[in-house]
Each structure stands twice: as C-alpha cells, then as structure tokens.
Amino acid sequence: MQWRALVLGLVLLRLGLHGVLWLVFGLGPSMGFYQRFPLSFGFQRLRGPDGPASPGRRRRAPRRPGQGVCGPAHWGYVLGGRGRGRDEYEKRYSSAFPPQLRAQMRDLARGMFVFGYDNYMAHAFPQDELNPIHCRGRGPDRGDPSNLNINDVLGNYSLTLVDALDTLAIMGNSSEFQKAVKLVINTVSFDKDSTVQVFEATIRVLGSLLSAHRIITDSKQPFGDMTIKDYDNELLHMAHDLAVRLLPAFENTKTGIPYPRVNLKTGVPPDSNNETCTAGAGSLLVEFGILSRLLGDSTFEWVARRAVKALWSLRSSDTGLLGNVVNIQTGHWVGKQSGLGAGLDSFYEYLLKSYILFGEKEDLEMFNAAYQSIQNYLRRGREACNEGEGDPPLYVNVNMFSGQLMNTWIDSLQAFFPGLQVLIGDVEDAICLHAFYYAIWKRYGALPERYNWQLQAPDVLFYPLRPELVESTYLLYQATKNPFYLHVGMDILQSLEKYTKVKCGYATLHHVIDKSKEDRMESFFLSETCKYLYLLFDEENPVHKSGTRYMFTTEGHIISVDEHLRESPWKEFFSEEGGPDQVGKSGHRPKPQELNVINSSSNCNRVPDERRYALPLKSIYMRQIDQMVGLI
Image (tube, rainbow, N blue to C red; front, side, top):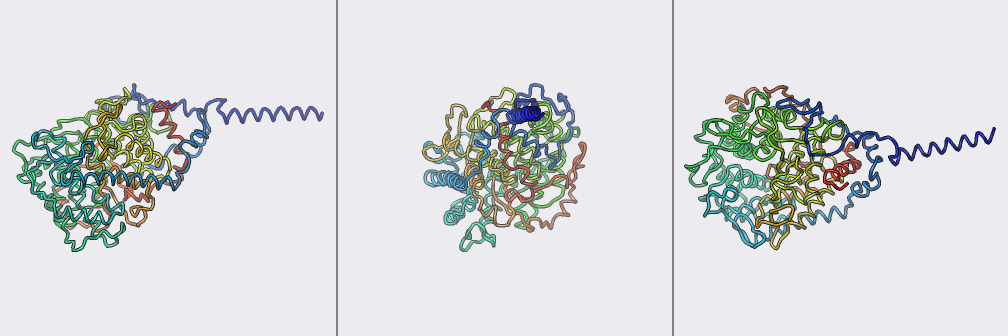
C-alpha cells in the first residue's frame, strides 16, 4: 500500500508540475487577451463597441476617468502570457531609468536647445528664423506675399529669440535670459509693414512676452535670479502694443469672428480673406485674457471671448461638433470636417485652459460638451483600450453635421490630445492614444505630417520638428511617473539627433522615409520641443518642485496659475453680453465636476493613483507598440 501511495503521489506531483508549466509558458488554453487584441489599425470595418459604426450614430459614452480596465490581474496575465513573455519585455522596456541616464538625457536636451539657439544668434538674429543647413537667417518673403507658409509666421520681429525666452529661464540660464530680454526690449519693434496671421502672432510672440514678464516680476524667482535691473514692465507694454495692432482683425466682422490676418502698420488688408479656421479664430482667449487681467482692460479678453462664443453658437445642433473653416461674415461652414488636428486642435485646448487660468465656469461647460461630442462621434473602435472586441480606439475626421467618416488620415497635430486628456484625468484613454502616435514615430523616427491609418502609410511626408508628441509624453510621465515615457523621450531625442541635426541647428525633415531635409528650423522647436524634452528628464526642475502650479500655452509658454488671473472686475459685463447659447444642447451636458480637471500641466498633482500605472504598463504598451509597427 505504501508503494502505491508513493506512485500516486509522484503522478500527482508530475501532473501538478505540468500544469504549472502549462500556465506559466502559455502552453495551455489562452486567456483570451491577445486573441481579442489584434492591434490592427486598418479599421476596414470601423467597428464601434456595439458593432459597425453607422453614419451619425451616437456611441456610448466612454468609461469615465478612474474606471480603467487595466487592473492588476489584467497586467499580471499579460506579463506572464504568450509570446516573448515577461522577462524580455521587462528587460527591454520595464527596467528602471537610472539617474545617470536621466541626467545624460537632460543634458542632451539642453545641448540640443543651446546648439539651435546659439546658431540662431550667431547666424540669423535679428531675422525671424534660422536656416540651419546654410547657416543664415530668414525673414518674411517680401517677393511673394502669397507664401503664407512663411509670411503668416514671420513678422520681421526676431521671432525665434522672442519665442525662446521662457525656455532660457526654465533651463536656469539667468545670464542669457537677462541678455535676451534686454535685446528684445532694445531691438524688437512691431511698427512693421508685415502682414501676419493673428493666431501665430498671438501664441508665439504675445504669449512669450507675457510669460517672460511674469517670470521677471515673480517675487519668488523659482528659476534663479531672472530679474532685470530697472525693469519697468517693458515686455508687458510691448505685448499691449502688439495686441492693439491685432485688434483691427475683430472689426467689421458680422459674426465677431476675427479676420485671419492683419498688417501690423495698416490693419486688415483690403483683399483679406473672409474665411478662417476654427482654431485660428478661437484660440486667442488665453493670451488675450492674461493681457486684459494684467492691464485691467477688458477689451482684449472681450473680443477673444466673443469670437469663441460666436464659433460655439455655430456648432451642429445634431452632433454638437464644429467644422474646421468658417466664413466670418456669414457664419457659413466652408470646411465641414470635424477632427482633433489642424484647424480645430487648440480650440478645444483653450476651452479647458481658459477655465484653468480664469475660472470662468462657462469655459468648462463648453469644454465638457465638446468633449462629449468628440467621444460620441470622433472616437471609433472598442470602448476600452485593452479589452473587448474590435479595433483599438482611434479619433477620426468626420462630417460635423452627420458624424460620417470623411477620410482615413490623422495629422501629427492630433498628438497633443493625450496630453489634454491627462489634464482632465482621462489617463487610461490618453495612454492608449499616445501609444498609437509613438508607434508611428517608432516606425519612421519622426511623425509624418499626415498618416493614413487605413493604408498604414504616410499621406504627407514632412516633419517640421513639431512638439505635440513630446508634450503628451511629458504630461503622461508627470501623471503616471512610469519610466516607459522616459524611454519614449530618449527615443525621440536620439531620433532628432540622428536625423535632423545639421551644420548650424536642426532641420525640418522633408521626407520621413528617406530623411531628406528642408532648410528651416521653426521657432517652436526651441520654445516647445526642446523645453518639453528637457523638463521630461529634469525631475528637480522648479516647475516640478517649487510648489507653484503652472500651465503651458499652446506654444509651450509657461504661465503660473494664481488667484490674480482669476480676478475679473468685468465678469458681470461679460454675462450681460450673453453666454454660449444653450451650452451642451446636443445630448447630455456633462456637469463641471464630471471631469477631474488638473489645474496644472506641469506638476499634475491631482491625478489618478500612480500605482495603477506602475512598471507593468510599459511592457503591455510596448508589446502593443511592437505589434503596431510590425516588430513582432
């Protein structure tokens, strides 16, 4: 009997060991995750969570922030599941990011900025931009006024120097910041015969002047001594001068929506276009509002807020969506495409950021309603990022009136949206959407300007050193503290060094596949791309440690969030003018408290529990990314 018991015990032990091996090495039945998560972004059927999407059909509202599907048990299976298994992914993507490597990447980001900035100062200043290949400056194209790609941005006002001011401060370079501010005060003038785009002049120049002024006059001086001897608010006066020169854009328009361009000397050109994009006309409120509140003059905030309300009143009564191009005289939608990219991106961004800065409830109500419409009509694929049938989520371009798909591409500007989702606490969806854009970067070493998600190939092939993916990476790291995003930042840094660095700076990629270049370094490379990369790796930066809440404008200019900017003596006057007509009249209007607004785009203190996004996140999303870019 004893031997029989011994044999039975050995048999049971062997079966037990086989069972363990069966489960650990994935030799048994699948738990279903990878069978349900093919990660094909072809979207041939454009399925929604309840089946194929139909024209104009409302999707169910997405899970609210904090109701994520990627809990500990879910991570546990994935890390020990089929394929490469936990060890390889832990080794590749889940290792801690050593302090020495972080310091090295921080210094590389600083060196990138310094190389571009020093070459601009040596070869291009006082012109607007640097041509980094031929080491010379670039200004407005006087010979071809129709060259809007250049003339909308370059106003003959030392654009790159002005745009880079607060980056110098954030990097702690007080001597160069003080020198640059004095140069701007002494050499920059807006009394120029330059026709510029109101939007570009506002976000790049006006925003930077206001940011630098706030840094200089901050009594706490968190970035070091950035004070200017005998400073008499010169930058604020310059901002006022520029804004006054932009005001004619808001005159003689029947809707209150501004003209897209003004001449800084003469006002609106006689042959001005009556059509403008939603983002260009509706993304002026942050800078104009700050200026009004610093000066105690309601004019600037009033015209910017009137433009926002006018655009909002024109949204579709069926879908709640806005188009991307509108006639400022008739209010007729010339461009009926609704999406998250060019023409609309910063409109949504500034609804939320205006509320964060100024505390005006109507701004948050408009944002909540817009966000709900985006979820209802633009978000396609399954409801959850990593669970359920169908394709992973993606935000597409649709007709504003019907919700029907208009095309099968996304543009690189849309990569800002995960960062915006972080600010409202919708971290789960932000993680998933960010992974999609990073997958494209991994494939090309850059983001093509336009990518066709059905063909899985670029439609427009250039990359002008845009910051949007870096911005979202930085904000997601601040929200999750997951080292995965440090690896993403390192990938981006190394790609920029490898593919875009030239003799005198960093050049636009003309073609993301063959890596041919164009001789242009846009000012946002120094004001945003380098800044976000630096902050990603500089954990001890005053932005993160000073105790002050900061917000970044759409051009990456830093603004402290404080009570002074929430003081509005003309609030009742705005109310008398009338608020947005029936905010959220399309379907359910989320209440302000439904979205967990984080009143800081840098500290991100109020975010979902970081422990939910601990190290396993990297492995699951890197597996997802690998599959998307064809590495598996």
